[in-house]
Length: 181
Ligand code: CTP
Ligand code: MG
Image (cartoon, rainbow, N blue to C red; front, side, top):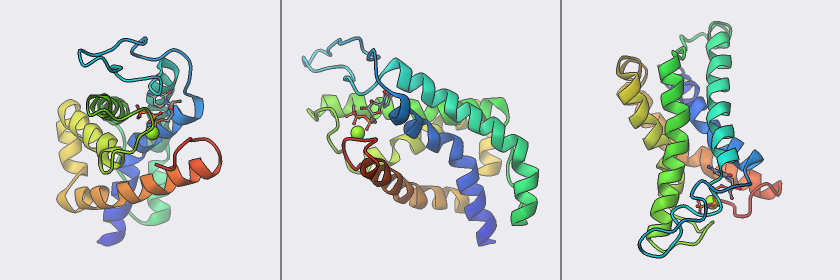
């Protein structure tokens, strides 16, 4: 039923949603690429991808997965649906995959001549979901195929860009982000 599909999609993706937001909140400091450039002369990633932001993002995703895992029976009872738990490899796949997707998108932005902070429609909204799903599929294939049924996947792919646009607009209005995307 629809409620179960939507609840499962959002629940299962939460550990992949928070890393980017945590990185924005606590990011800064030394850039991951240490200022290095690619052979096109442009920065590898740029000053927007830092050690602190990346580490905080991964840790936030892992911590949230542990929290959700502990609360899944309670929340599931409240909603009247069976929510998935997060085995360690699933948590790692979602949290690390989400951050890796953001880094890969940044790399692609620099290769296509986009400055730090430039918008890259669709890539900005989906990079972390696609990478998180790919890594969790590699690290925890059994878990991933049980949780991400076709209807759940469809909800994830439709709801994620909307959620992303919404949270980033909110972060922009709160002065946490320089651009609303
Ligand atoms: N951030 C960070 N480390 C990350 C991701 C984000 O420190 N791995 C912080 C940075 O301060 C960054 C801000 O969060 O400026 C916003 O993140 P994002 O929009 O993803 O980066 P941009 O600055 O837009 O850089 P890029 O164009 O490379 O995506
Ligand atoms: Mg940006």
